[in-house]
Length: 168
Image 1 (cartoon, rainbow, N blue to C red):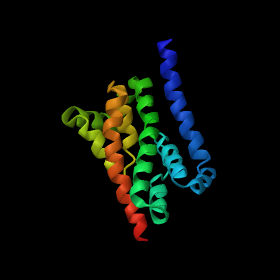
Image 2: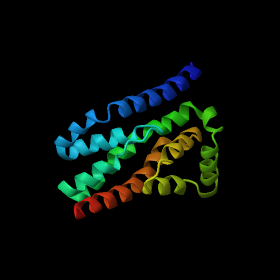
Image 3: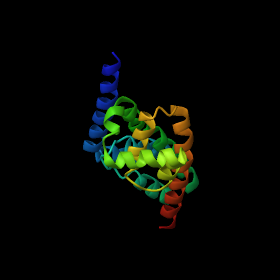
Image 4: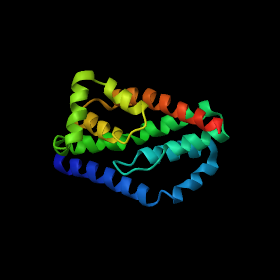
């Protein structure tokens, strides 16, 4: 039963990511719903594991149209929740996590710097954050601690991006 749970977590994260990637162009209609649309676009854009979906564009464009501070907060909330797919992929696929060279590098950073690694990687635009989420999940970091450090990192990033959008 425990093995089935692991496969379901990994398979679910991958399937969810693939569906978001395939239908990413159709999700843009959510932008018509203001802050709620920004929240869901950010959530879905950050829920993909490894597959790139430029969720930061939601905050950039949203910052040009709405209050950039609120856009940053809403986008960060959505992004933080969306990053749970990577975390749970790590929980379910912990044996796979230990074999990838990039993941091993992030594990070493986590051993050296702890949760600051997660915070820093959440605060900068980079595709490696999915891997950090997987490491956190595989390392059995409690989900509340993971979310507690992801949110401020995402908040910094999305407020900066939203304000950048407000300049244009």
